[in-house]
Image 1 (cartoon, helix red, strand yellow):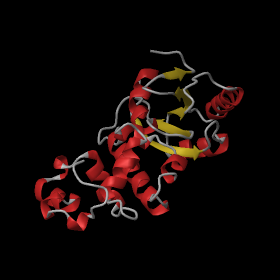
Image 2: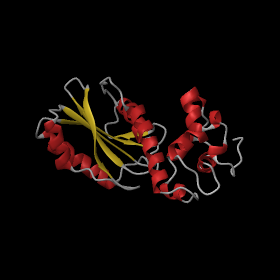
Image 3: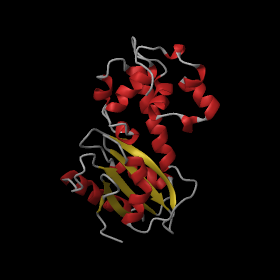
Length: 229
């Protein structure tokens, strides 16, 4: 990175300091380590913020994407990284994830492949399970989507009563359930199949269709209960 780890950022030429460099030349002029240095703000001991950021990046082979998947425990194991710096990094990666998944358009969902394309940006990099519901009108156009529950590495709760209630409130004609398996194993578990059957039955009584239940894995891979498309 060009600077010794024993040299404070305050001793660098002004145009070399990450914040000043960002303001003068734009964020695109900064290296990955410099961008992270702006986020974590300070270094540790004799290490500058950029040097500390470099150590953090080393955990993920200088890949920001892989860094976003790095566990909190590994990040906290880096000397100089505390809960405040960890929170800044976690928030930044979540903002990036949400920016990728947000879309001003309301797409039409016609098959499992559409579901995977719509939800993959959100699930990318998550190290825990989340259950999301996509609410659709009669033309299968998305009304909205929302996270119903979050869980641990291997499970999350899919409450039939809550999902049914929210579908009624949204005046949805149909819904799609989607959740991720961080392990990469797309095979549905016994609880997945049980909840899917119970939810389909409960919604049918209200003339609301459960169009699909899609389990998301890595790199856009998925399993669909409907076997459509």
